[in-house]
Amino acid sequence: MNYFRNKKGISALVATVLLILITVAAVGIIWSAVNPMISDNLKFGQACSDMRMSLEVDSSSAYNCFNSTSNITNVVVSRGVDTLNLVGLQIIASGASGANPFEIKLGSNKTNVKTSKDPNYAGTFAYGDIPVSNGAIAYNLNTSLIGKPDKVAVSAIVKIGSTEKKCESSSPVVIDSCAS
Image 1 (cartoon, one colour):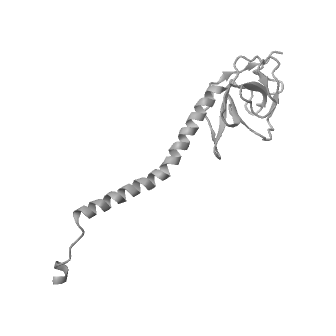
Image 2 (cartoon, rainbow, N blue to C red):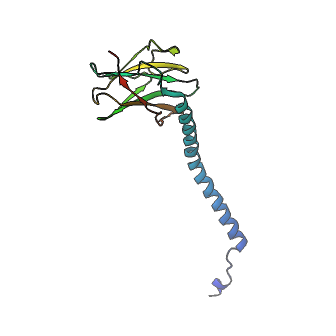
Image 3 (cartoon, helix red, strand yellow):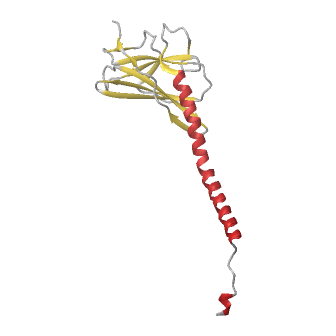
């Protein structure tokens, strides 16, 4: 019995120091896991905000219209001056029958989308998949699934590191029927 009475426990000071060290280590481990998630979300948020200001359906183009004979919706998507890593875009045509998204990525095969030059557009025109900085592309969308769309919007697909993210869409533009 004397054996247990003579044993001393660790002092209060040593116990306090150990608890503080364990707490600091736990905070460090948690922060190293959470910090990359916060950082990536902030980068994507900034990129999407900048791209939303830069990428839009060109509401001033007379080329934007719906051809009821062919069920083709013509849309000009323009891009302002930016240095963002735009890897694709999604054009959303919506009407009374629902919405029809058209995703266009660099190097993709587009079955329901063709590109062409809007003869009335004065800016730089490229025949690639997506508009270059300070350029535009006219898209001919096969909207036979929904018929005539009432409006069309565009959203950017940006890439940061090896991760891609689809951004919020731009303000929609009203689509009228093409002149005969």
